Image (cartoon, rainbow, N blue to C red; front, side):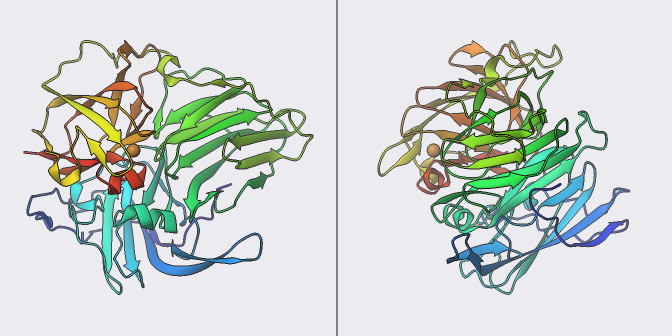
Length: 433
Ligand code: C2O
Ligand code: CU
């Protein structure tokens, strides 16, 4: 069962030639950006439509709220495809005056399809259309959102889940659900609902939960009534994840965690966030909501993979980024967006970034178009599973080293995914020569 309904689809699984709408190579900034290959290979094409429009959402308490939504739905419709398929999404903007785009958060795709207004395309104005196309190469849990004035538009509702199912499932489970956490005009919601989301699940059933943290502030979740495993972070499977019992975990803005749990014999599990959201699985007797959960730390979780070492990796160049925020200024290395020189790389470079959060709360650091490996935290190399992320939660005084293989030419944003911080300057570019 999906957390939100699946969207209407056009011709599914047809094969044939494709007109890419964004074959333009020159981007608004005058630099070049890779286009999608115009000829479809033998992969199946899945076509979807997203229409952005002003909408009125009815709330549980009978009041209504003015929102902006894709296809009238909060969150937007779930786009669900299979690994290897060519995804085509036709975006229409009905009446969002400042224009919209769609960014495919976490997906590695050609730069021209990345959906960043002012960088990879112009915003799509009311009455206009834009067609995105990419190959869904990597299975996992992702999301999409407008990247035009995103600090305002995401909060207004222009976002939704994007699931890439694997060709072959690595884990067995009976059912799965997507849980998208968002802040809508100041209220935290899960799949559009404030506070409680009941889900029927029978004792003994195994469930995969695809959690997408799309709100600006970090959320901490506890699982009550069952032990669980964290299968994947940011769409990438952890290596041999162990069982967690009475553990809570923190999700920074933009991150995804996939959980696997089994419904206990007494039939009920509650997943609770510190901000008050709850998902109640099953119908049995209440599990005890404990307050003494240990914090899950992924730095020593799972089993090292000898094929993905964290030490002594070859590095072509290194950069240091300090993230800071005070009342008026959000900065990287003391500067804000337009003053920050881009990091310039050549295709093939192996790049190490050392990122320190020196103040102003949590800064979830997101890199577009790539997936990076986390090497160390506060000088300690990771001792567990290799961890590949596209969004790294940094908290005050933490330093992380991450490793990026420059294998996707283009112009790519890196920014704090507290979108308020990003809009106030905590954003910069990683550009290929
Ligand atoms: Cu999900 Cu540039 O963002
Ligand atoms: Cu921040």
